Length: 170
Image 1 (tube, helix red, strand yellow):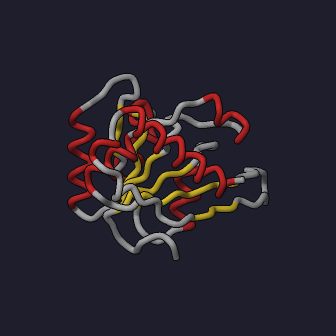
Image 2 (tube, one colour):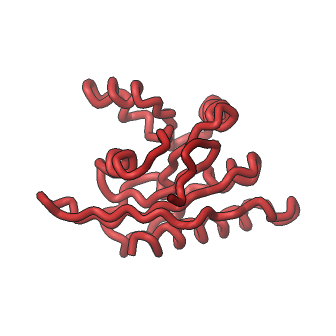
């Protein structure tokens, strides 16, 4: 009930397993357009399905203006964007302190004034194991003054966002 039925919104989640996107899609109502590493497009069968799902491929090694344009277009089309701020899978929650989150979700939230909805996944990923998907209250970055939107402040907001996600996953 905390996820909107439609966008625009940004969903941010922890990423521990290859099935995270599927688990979130099976647990939520709105279709989520995910940002994913471009290498997945090159995998023969998986790449086909990823393209059909509307995933926006991103090169994690460089900044790409076309990716930002694609995200803005989807936001203007009232879609829900999904981002794993870690930028990679983490095998356990204990590893979070070893990875600096990416700041893209915060940047897009600040520029577009749309809500950021944290999602925590607590997986066991065993046969007949339970997987819990917990959706948190939207994070509001709308009231951040322009002079508080420098790189250091945005990184602090991204770290705060990841902590909120991991509270839900814990």
